[in-house]
Image: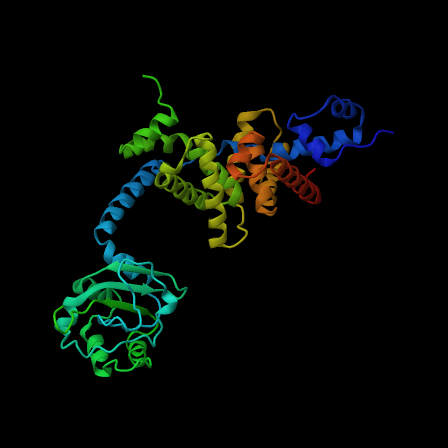
Length: 219
Length: 190
């Protein structure tokens, strides 16, 4: 007696893919024909699904409306890109890394360079006794870097107003507090005191403000 | 006026004529909806998925390289959206049996007005059961079975839409059918 076809072969037969041998077997084997009939019956049971159509008359309009809205939104997002890019990723603890121009100081975030978030630890704070006032800090701010819990980071060119808005967006409107806190702690040691203050103030986010400070001698 | 080809419409959209995309929406919405409906078994979800697919297609239209038919590319987006939707909503959704029964009744009336009421009811139940069981088979098999047995796509197009080899397409279709057949037999419908 000839060997029966496998289910796969019979299923292929139902799709019109068969050899002469398959066809010959199918014409003489009631068992394989029965399996083929079952497959065809299952297909028949699925048939009504072929005739489904969208019954919502407003479907097309809704899609086109959403597409138009999406385009508008994207345009407006581009307009505030410096803020949204920063705001979207802010997640972890806050610390301030203030940088002076001394070449021997530990490296902090260089604007525009590929950021290495792992090197920016809470302890990487710097002596900033040459910064006399918040006003001076605000004019020297050149970038904002925001680090997520995953260690990803975004560095955005930013002026003082930009970073204020970023903080406002996160409900942290009193931005001068952080500079005061930093100054209050004076960042005289790199023991993480500034970061500790940041954690208290800003809960679970970690934001590094990259500052390019003027040289005390104006060089 | 002759109908514009998909390629022409896509070029127009990419050139800034957003409204031209409405032609593609009209042309493909039913196919996408049908697939989504078969996949998730719920008409409201299917409508939502169809919208998401078309919007996603618009947004990534520049990535369509024309290596396959536009419909095949759309199906690949649809399968991904369906999968994401299923993850968001939880694994298995109940089939909207009443609505499907109703539509199936209509289909049967169109197909053969001589069918006895008894047979119509039986077929209606069988269809609802098949749609239910379709959603209980693994999603890889389900997608392949829907594309082949409902959308009537060729093995080749399915291979492109799902980004899998032809032999894999066959395996998924045949195994999916085997599972469906077994389940339908267990319900006494074969």
